[in-house]
Amino acid sequence: MQRRLASLGLCVAVALGATLLLRAVADNFDPAEKTCAQNLARFGIAIAMYLNDYDDVFPMAYERPAPTQAWRWNELAPVPRDWQSGAPREAWVWVNSLEPYLGSVYYRYRPTRLSCSATLPVKQPGVDYSQRVRSPFPVSYTYNGYLHRYRLASIEDFTTLPVIWEGLGREHLIGFAPVNPLLRCDRPDQAGKDCFFRPCENPADHYPRGEVRLPRQSVWIHRTGMHFLYLDGRVQPRRLGRRLAPNQTDPLQDPFTLYNAQGIPSAAHTDACGYLPLFAPQ
Image 1 (cartoon, rainbow, N blue to C red):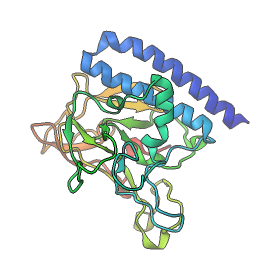
Image 2 (cartoon, rainbow, N blue to C red):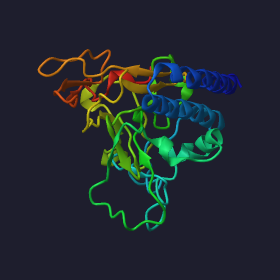
Image 3 (cartoon, one colour):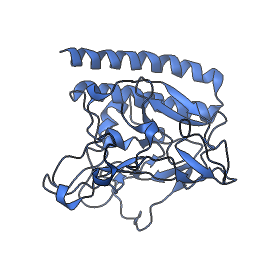
Image 4 (cartoon, rainbow, N blue to C red):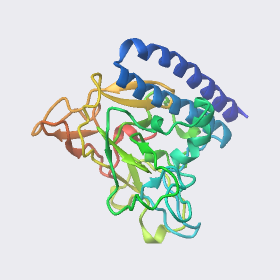
């Protein structure tokens, strides 16, 4: 009961915070940046509503074809799930799980709100976009994969944990939802078992390890920086890429490092288990 009340309280707090944010961004951001921040704020409301309905367990970052088979941890989920010809898949990954809640927030589902207008479109290699049942959605926001089936009660500080962010840089994928960072749920002897984030204690035998998608486009998306949605509903910009290679960035402020002159990083600040400390649940 206490956890249920806590989840309900989080839902109310996030909704109130997002309402204030939607009003505040109009004064602080340019039009494109305002829209992108508002999109993330609405995701915050959707996440809080989802947690309240699903016993305080976060959405899945990836699925598996059957309970005894391996997680498709490194595959992108189609969005919407049935846009491609053939059987729908990845219906329960994060963005498809949040679709009903995004619809209730928007009053009608608008696919353009899954991406930031300041990003560039990219199609997935090897995908035949002519074989489709409906139009694919553009997606630029990425989910913190460490939260895959993670419990809200295990998180100590809601104010410092990013949930969704602009983790692809100045890019959006046509028809697919990315996760960044990820859990490498890839060991054959663990196939069919649940895959959860665990703090890095023994790197030599740690499972699952972490994986990071390095942005292929610049992280300099907005005048104020890259937007992060935190678990308490705040949308806060971070100025990434303050220092260029060969200089290293501050790992407490920037998940990436060794940036080139276009603001594209070539490395990430990971620990011995491959995790980005900024995204690790505490």
